[in-house]
Image (tube, rainbow, N blue to C red):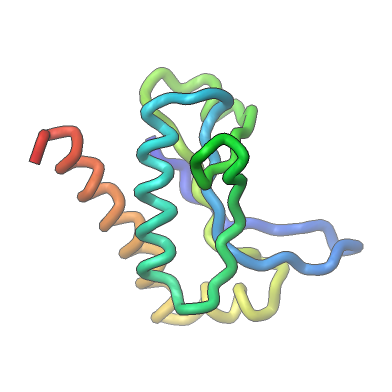
Length: 120
C-alpha cells in the first residue's frame, strides 16, 4: 500500500524542502520497498532535490506511527512529495515536469517492487 502525500510545515517555521518516505516502526518488507522508492526519487527528481531521511536504523525511511501505516496489514509506506509551503517545491509540483516526475518515480518504484516480488 502506498499513500501519496504532499508535505507542509507550520507558518512560523523556516519552510523545509524535499522528499521523504515513511514506514511503520520496526523492520518489515515496507522498509525494503521504501528504499526502492527512495532510490527512484533520487533518480527521477532534479539534481539537488533535498532527500529528507533517517538513516539511523540502516535505511532511509522515517519510522512513523501513522495510523495508515500502523493499521494496514500488508506492507505499507507513505511518501511526502515535496513541500507545499516551500515556494520552490510548490512551483515545481505545479509544473508539468514536476507532476510527471512525481508520478513516474511512483510508477518506476512499483514496477521494481513487482519484479522483486515475482522473482524477476
